[in-house]
Length: 575
Image 1: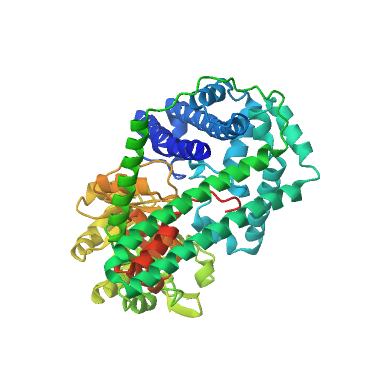
Image 2: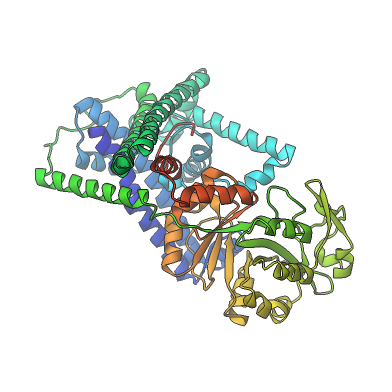
């Protein structure tokens, strides 16, 4: 019970209190400088607002300190339980916060690299919700994997972080428990793991496999039992599903407990404690029994209430299906009319496509800023006229098709009664009146056919809302740094860092959220669970099938399996 209180209490405090506060402070810092959003497209604007930059740096320092304190509480708490056979929360907090991380340029650089680069990518199980957004977006990973040398570089990066993670594995225990200075702790960990790197790797691997097998066996038994009940006793199926979902939730929490406890045991195994009386024997205060019972009752009722709502399908809504670049699983050449016609037969809600301005200030349907990959011509769209561009033939996926003008593509879509999601690509070579001409030429037609527009360029988003207020405009965000404050109708967010809190906040402000680019069932189910309004995919049929399986009255066993996928709470090492 003490380990449960320690680990779950720490995780819930971080998730329910610390992260919302950090998010709020970040929003206030950006509001101070009237900065509507943060993306790689506007990161340089931070340097024009020194007070905002200082505030964000202070928040970064605070976050690093909080990560350090989180791991410190876990390590100290586990040692306290083992040495005193009980958990004394007030003393634990006092001991933890009395030991502040060393403040120096070296310590800042070390903790920044250790917490932001090594821990998230080494896969050693030292995880925290505070680092949940430290991920390489899937679209970048896919781009790197498409090139052999870049894929090798990415693999090398992961191997290097794994190696550094193993060599620096004992830095935190030596800082927290042995109270060594940072430089000494780094040197000691490096020396301690010199001939034992493989041993420590297999220790963590064995822990991960053991916990995974245990979890898998538990989940399998529950799913089999529910499948049988669904088939032979429908009246009892819902009651059984509620009970089985509670069992799944208990198993998932057990996984968290065993993963963290097992990992901390490995970290503390070789640590020599200089003074076993580190923790004084303070009076052990117990919470009044009625408070404990009341809290447990509230939690139980909340869990059962959620389970009933989830199992009845009230948490899942059907999102729009959006074909990325107008293709489905490589059924044609992206952004071409033949592919549009073929994909339209599968009835996507929207076909996403891209356009660029041409040399003669027309619009061509093209994603890339260089034509070479598709047409073999080493030119950019702005360097050729529309007539020159539409003479080119694009080759992809074993197909070929002529490059299309936006006029022709839009006419074909309207003839097919196919709604579009038009991405306006911009470059520094665009004419000053590009957006005005786009609105004057296409605005009314797009509105008439209920098409939508989105762009990565915030100036396009604000310009469209100013010049064509009734047009549906979505702002593309490649990374979830913080929630933006814009007049956009929607956000097209890269799925890797998209969270349910982002979706909830957007929908609370009557803005929709589209997730891109979602190409597997697991991510699709995660997006459904988070409640997104639309999903952009390269595999339309697969997406439609997964959505149908989740929203078209699935049996309870299917919902239980979806829950296991949709809401993983594991903290598995090497996960």
